[in-house]
Amino acid sequence: MKIKKTAVPFFFLYLISWTLFATDGIKQTDSYQFFIDLTNVQKDKIRVELITPEVKNNDITYNIPKIVPGTYSEDDYGRFIENLVALDRDGQSLPVVQVNVNSWKIAKANKLYKITYLVNDTFDAVDKRNKAVFEPAGVNIEQDTNFVLNNHGLMGYFPNMEKRKYEVTITHPTAFYGSTPLIDQDDSQSTDRFVTESYNHLVDSPIMYCVPDTAVVRVGNTDVLISVYSPTKKVSAHFLAQHVGPLLQAQGQYLGGNLPVNKYAFLVYLSDKPSLSGSEGALEHSYSSVYYFQEYEPEAFGAYFRDIAAHEFFHILTPLSIHSEQIHNFDFNRPQMSQHLWLYEGTTEYHAHLVQTRYDLTTPEQLLNVLSTKITSSRQQYNDRLSFTQMSANVLKKYAPQYGNVYQKGALIGLCLDIKLRQLSGGKAGLIDLVQDLSKQFGVQKPFTDDQLFDEIGKIAPTEIKAFLNEHVAGSQPLPLHEVFNLVGVKLEEEKAVNVFTMGNVLLQEIDNERLEVASTNQMNTVGQQLGYQKGDVILSINGASVTSSTYGDFRKEWMQTVKEGDELAIVVSRKNGQGVVQPVTLKTRVMPSVAKKYNQLSFIENPSPEQLATRKAWLRKS
Image 1 (spheres, rainbow, N blue to C red):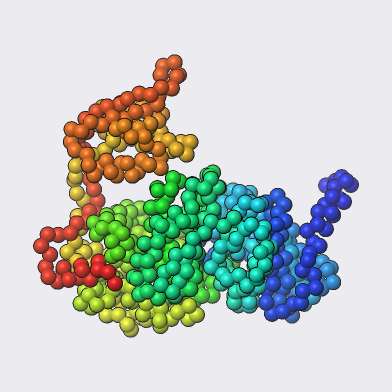
Image 2: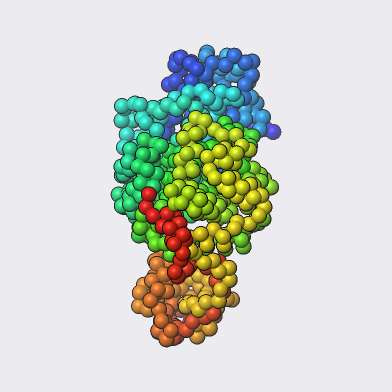
């Protein structure tokens, strides 16, 4: 291929501008010494410099992760790395061959001193496969605005050297603050220095830089940092602290008041445009969690955030304090998955809902509604006969479509264990006690052997618990939900015909980030037919109240609680007339009930026995 001569000096100057570094002369040690400059961004790329540990081998491979804990997705972060260069102590280039998307083999490695490369922004970049990274696990580079640094996307490791110390120096705009669970060891206003004892700890410690909007909630012995980036300032850290504060205090009491971490960080990135991945949500870490959401109206987002934060915060229990060797020695490029997603995600999800009921943030009836939804989802959307341990061990490939069941059946496994433990102990101990006992036996630095966990549980729990785990978690038998709910005086009706009130049963979709449009009338019921919905109608108001996409859910919930048969329902929509002119149209009818099937309905039975009542109180009481 011919290359114009004028292109050569330009490319040469470009490389020079990225390879003259201020790190020259720094002494090599046994540690990884990383330097990142957030004040020098070019085309959504930042430069990373590494003064490597001393290498004795003739060649060595530098790896960027293929996958990281908590994602259960092979994302190949190496595809966002460009222009990787290896240099000796004299600044001379060493031979480098990229052996796969995430690995670079460096020859003459016994002379290696420095590695440099560029990191691309994953929030707005995809490769030729058009595979976007889930934003809470990615890297955001917005010069002078915001940086989300999930460290696995910026820094790598040498094989068998992951346990070395990592020293990371970050230069940033002086107006920015780096929110992270790590402790800054530099007093400078424009430089932060973070030190971790291993690569695993580094990956477990994301950082978000922006003009600070932070709040701190003290929970027992722990400072919980809430850091928010909201481009239009719709949501503030103080606002979220007010919403999540009572929950955090309840979680602290639920855990006995003494938490296993001294500092925890909620890093919340809100966007005013759709995500590249098409998703939103959170990624948990042992000492923090990263969130990516659209900028909803504050009140709607506050309640939404609280439920998700409840789950993520409880990961300070599992897998931080209880985890297998597969997690403790996580292989970022050839991972072996643990069998125990029921423990890491399932029990975490269960605790997150139970704590809210125990400390009066939700009612027992609301808890039953949550559990009802999980039963239906686990049975209708997933394979209820699939061994949960087998699914977990093969979740990356064979059983990837079954992963979502960890939040459904996984939570129900936690429920069954909790109630059975309460009943067997006369109300004295439950799942949280079992988890805390396991955390004392193992802990942050002592993993369990994956296929021996049930034996370990059998040593400290009643024999019935090990039998349950073998039959219903490792085995293929469905959960004995009728039996378990009966222990606390709860009735499970798997199918029930009920009268329900609806606003016509049409499919709505959000448009323009605010309004709701009728997307389909295919399932419209009698009420909808009498109203006269048409596809394309845009909802303006219901019974005189203005309704948007962010307020509709709360409005409908309140309407469902107060509506009676015969009440008038008036919905104003905007609709094009025969001449194509958009104008308001009022749709009216009288409300009437429709018969619908509901599945897996849960309700407290009247006149429970003394044994049922005692176990129920032990299940739902405050710690």
